[in-house]
Length: 114
Image (cartoon, rainbow, N blue to C red; front, side, top):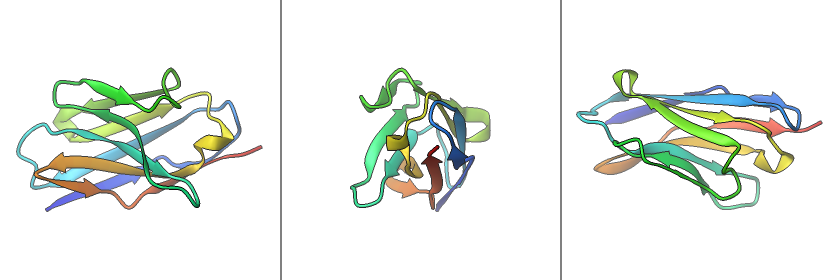
């Protein structure tokens, strides 16, 4: 089993920055793909950013140039640095990991509002 614990969500004003972190623990025996998805009220969960074992990254068009995903393999953690936040970035952000099966964190709320 794999456990994912997110941290770093909160309430910010438009244009501000926020950094999310996700710590993975449990049955992880290699460097695996990790990433972030988000779900806004009334909408489907959508991909935000992913990072592979080779540090190849993929971003949703809506966050390119504003968000940066990174990982610390020694600590089994993944981070999402979010800058120039917009109200439409408001959502619950979920950490994701792929190790045989897909694993999800419980989510952390990000609210962008003036």
